[in-house]
Amino acid sequence: KAGVTQTPRYLIKTRGQQVTLSCSPISGHRSVSWYQQTPGQGLQFLFEYFSETQRNKGNFPGRFSGRQFSNSRSEMNVSTLELGDSALYLCASSAGTVGEAFFGQGTRLTVV
Amino acid sequence: GQQLNQSPQSMFIQEGEDVSMNCTSSSIFNTWLWYKQDPGEGPVLLIALYKAGELTSNGRLTAQFGITRKDSFLNISASIPSDVGIYFCAGRILGSSNTGKLIFGQGTTLQVKP
Image (cartoon, rainbow over the protein chains, first blue to last red):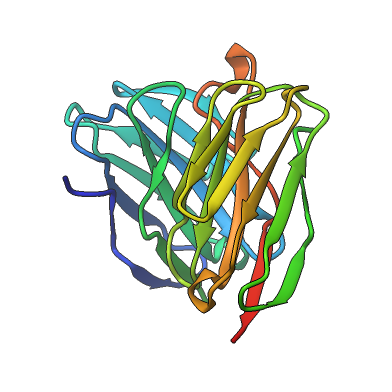
């Protein structure tokens, strides 16, 4: 059974640009959540999608958005990039609301 | 805010020693998850706990869901060099407003001396 796949693995963007990250969850999993990991703040929850609906959102500015498709794949978008957006972005896949959450390898975003 | 206090922050031990780390919170959790993360990689799930008092093992790893539902600990017995990494606790807080959200501890960095 394939795990959680995130693409791309690495990205370098310039301030002011926008970026889209992709996550394919484990087959059969309907919940996808996104996290930002930085040395200073640790792992912070961005948002969670279940059956194409955003069910929960963390304390991030509106520049951070996401969506989920009917096949459960999810994308997150960050607009007007800032230097502070440099981080490892992780996506987690779960079968439902509770239970185990399995992470992808992450996308390392560097904003210059 | 919702926080998890994880300790210790780091440990440097001799190969063969046992390791213990824990997480505490002021909130009640309905799920505890323990992860290990290697540099540049995503966290890998080690153990999942769902009931107060639950004690679960995975090889040399043992974790428990605290009776008060506000804490959890992870033990690693007879450590080996490949145990090196950062260990995170994570939990789901009870309540509909916390749907799908994991709260993470700050991590425990483990170094093992051969």
